[in-house]
Length: 187
Image (tube, rainbow, N blue to C red; front, side, top):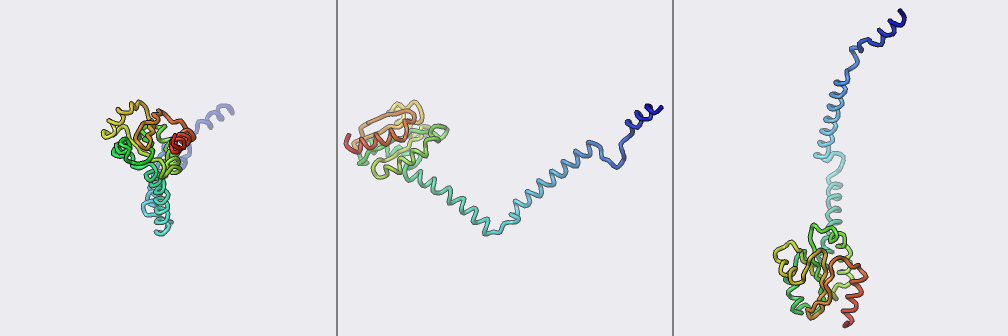
């Protein structure tokens, strides 16, 4: 009989004060929703930050992004500049030109962009850098003229507009430095 009593105690109904599993889930979801709403309200009303702190963080973010874009445009020119290619081909720019055929979707182009910007900075005033986005209609004639089949492709023109190199892919920073120095030395 003792064994029967033990078995019976194990099957006792839960206490009425203890919520069932479904109730705990409902309570948990309710607390989660409440927490997310509270967090959202804090973000909307910028609770805990003064207006000057918010303005300072927004301003520093804008200042941090600005030099990168300005530096890129300063040393590489606009993202698509077929007019400069025409001038370079005619020898009207008075300096060697590196034409960079690229695309926004090209991962290698995005990877090498910082190095190309550094090259542009190093040879600023000595070699003109021109970018052509192969996806733009204005660039198609140059893409065909130079037989561009891959991105990135770099075409090096001397000061008179003659092609001195047509390189698919990224040969490396030093390869361009050597080519520019040789071209600038008259070779």
